[in-house]
Structure formats: structure tokens, C-alpha cells
Image: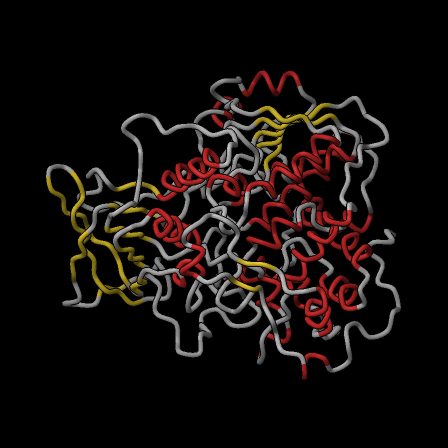
Amino acid sequence: MSSYLRREPLGALGELGAFLKVHRVGFDKRDPGERVGDYRQYFSLQPDEELRRQGARCMDCGIPFCHEGCPLGNLIPDWNDLVYRGKWREAIDQLHATNNFPEFTGRICPAPCESACVLAINDDPVTIEQIEMAIAERAFEEGWVVPQPPGRRTGKTVAVVGAGPAGLAVAAELNQCGHSVTVYERDEGPGGLMRFGVPDAKLEKRIIDRRVDILASEGVNFIYDKDVGRDIDARDLHDEHDAVVIAIGSRVSRDLDAPGRHLRGIHFAMDYLYQRNRWVAAQEGRPFRHPKPGTEITARGKRVIVVGGGDTGMDCISNSHREGARTVVILDVYAELPPDGHDPRHPWPLPPKRTHTTYALDEGGKRRWGTEVTGFGGKDGHVSHVYARQVTGTSSRDLTPVPGSEFVLEADLVLIAIGFEGPERTGAIEQLGLELDHRRNVRTKQTYRTSVEGVYACGDARIGQSLIVTAIAEGRKCARIVNKDLGGSPMDADREMLAVGAWSGEADRTLRHEAEAAGTVRPGEEFFSGPGASGR
């Protein structure tokens, strides 16, 4: 058994009774009026002494629900206790044992572990996400995170298509098994939507580059600006490698079928976020691409309407503020939360779909709850109005219009942020002839093996749009299946337990899976991620 994962008989974790006398202290957040003037990270860590106090709040629960709330199965009570005891070096070992990229999840994961914290039943949960980020940053500062190339090579080669969190995780794990891994990315840099969707205010791209530099030093080969399925024939990759992993994400934006959708000035949110992140890259001297002439999207001086109240919509608000939008309004079909902020539709230990406020709304703008867009009006071919109405219901699937509630909003720019419909089917999927499931994702029957021998799929391309922490878990599990099929040596037995579902064909026994099985939560539904109103 791995020494990193063994639960040693250390006695009670944390400080006995600390949760009764130590109050939660979350990230330190910059003043909203100041931070809208730049793209730097808007939150920072508490001092080490305060972080140790926060770690002491962990109660050493008999059943640590935070484990179940985390798709990675992170050993949260263990590293909370290690931080409380000042054992930062041991803490990063525990953290890396289940998570390849804690510096990513410590910044932009929605922290379902905190929603599942037993303290959250009637108090503020342990500030798990902040402690995770603190461990990772301390490890980098101390020089503990260094390249660790595998001791041998197997002679097997693997092509990973897509450099998002799932692709990076599967590449990292297979490389450590000794297989030679090449990651193909169609964009100019790694990270997927972490780089081109998430604003720098939440995740500065140097954080991604820092980790990818380590992976490259360990032997992972990265090829950018090559679109598999267009620039490179996916069938050639299949012929040239012992295994191919499809990790292209869920990139087909869900559209809004409403009159006037054709008007100029109405765009998918991701098209706007791509351009803004590339603009920031240009200012910082990083690789970027100019938008094609005539396709530029800007919020400067405009009345912006964002359709969709999830994380993508909030990121659109944040960027609009920084561009200098005239006004920003976000339209959300979800019903307004009760005054206490606890949504009865998502009871403990399930994560919330919405919070009272977000980092973006703290910076300005207005959210209209229970609102459905019915159409668009225009002048000279450009959008000028949004037609909407109030609705009731528990989600976008069971909306009932409120009679007489119709209203009109003026708009110069409309950004549609209502989710994604799955991976792009043209290109690699089409060339390889991969079967799709009923939700139009790559069909794998929970084994990560696709319908074509030697081709695997993981992440959002397999399960639909999800969370960064789920994507990393998908990559890690997929790597175990690929390694097994390539005849690789068994991976760490304890970490192998994370792939039980993939090995046996049975679903993972996590809270998220149980909720999905019960029909209360469906994969792909977005909820706010990043340090939120609860003080993460």
C-alpha cells in the first residue's frame, strides 16, 4: 500500500473542538472596484498561521463526506490535518497522490467537497479549496514540485488529442507508466477551456504553463496548432500509435432557438471568452491568435445581455466589466434563491447550482432570476432588443411561463451561455468512426474503451460538460485502462481504486453519481465555480 495513502493511526485529526471556536476565513478578495481595472487574480491566500487554524476545523468525521463529494477522492481530512500540524511537505505528497493539478482545482474547482463537508449541515464548511491551493503554492515555492521522468520506457506510444485537464491528466499518468506520450492541441497553447474560457482573474495562465513545463521536462511531447481531424488525419494517428485517447472536451455550444437569433451582435459566450483570453495573452507577450477580420466581439460601451446564469455567463460578465461595458444584465431561468441561500432542490451534501452572489456580480451588473428569452429584435440587421418573460420551475427542463410577465430589454451585444451539447462530431470522431451514445457523446460503456480498438475517450467528450475536477479524475481513470491494455505494469494499488468503475463496468459510487442515478442531478448542468459567495 502506498505510504501516501495509508491512514496512519495519528489520533484525532485537527484540533479537538476547533470547529466550535474557530470561524471560517476564506480567500482574501481584492476590492471589486479595483480589480475590474486589470486581469490579475482577484483573490489571495490567508497567512500560514490562519491556514493552520482553518485546517484545525476539520472534524475527522467517521464518514468523511468530503471524500465522496470529490470526484478525485482527495484525502481531504489527511492534508487538512497535515497543514494544521505544519507538515506542508507531507501534505503535497498526500495531495498529489490523488490529484495531478491541485494548483488548478485550488483556484477554479466549484469545491463540491465543501458542499459535502459535514460542518456545512449547520455551519460554514472547512475552507478546503483554499487549503488545497495553499499546499500547492507552498510546494512550488519550496521547490518540492520538480520533474520526475519515468525510470524506464516501455516502447509503447500514445497520442492524446486535446490538452485540457482530462488530456493533461491522462498524459501525465501514462508518461509515468513509461509510455511515450504526444499531446496534440489545435489551439496555440495547453489548458483547453482553462486557458481560453476561464478569465485570468480566476486562473492566470502562467499557472498552467508552470505545470505543463514540468510535464514536458518529464518527457511528454506537446504539439500545438495542429487540429486532429483537419490538419492531421485521425486515422493516421491510430495507425502510428499503440493507443489514441480522445479528450477533446464538450465544445459544441447549445444554441437558443428563438426568433431573431440570426441578428448580428448575438454570439456564443465561448467565442467571446476565447477572444478576451487571447487579448490578455497578447498584452502579456504570450502566443495568441488575432480574430479573423469582421469577427471581433467587444463589450466596450455596449448594453450587454448574457443569457444563462452558470459559470460561463459569470465569466462573460467579468470580462464585460473589464472592457468597460455600458450595462450588463444576466438572465437566468433558475428561480431566485431563498433569503437564507439554501436551495431545497439541492440539499446537503449536494453542491448548489446557484449562489446569492458571485465574483462577477460583486463587480457589477444585474441578475434577473426566473427569466426566459423568447426572441430578439433588431435594427438594420443588428440586435437592439431582447424579448423575455418570467417563468417558474425547478430547472430549464420544466419551465412554466407567468402570464402577463413579458418585458423587453435594450441590447447591443447578446452572449449565449446556456451550456454545451457535446464534442464536435466532425473531425477526429468522424474519421475514426466512433460510436456515440444517446447524448451524442463518445460511447464507451464506462470502460473508457470506444467502439474502435485502441481508441479511448475521457473527460467531457465522454460524459458531457462537467467540472475540472471531474475531467482530471476522468483522465486518471482512463490512463489505468490504457496502461492495462498496453501491458504496462500495474499502477499504484491504492490509486487504482479510483478506477473501480472503469474496470468493472459499474458506475463510480460517488455522491454525484448517486444523485445522477436518482435523477436529481444530471451531468452537464453548470453551477458556479471558483471562490464564491460563501468565502472560498
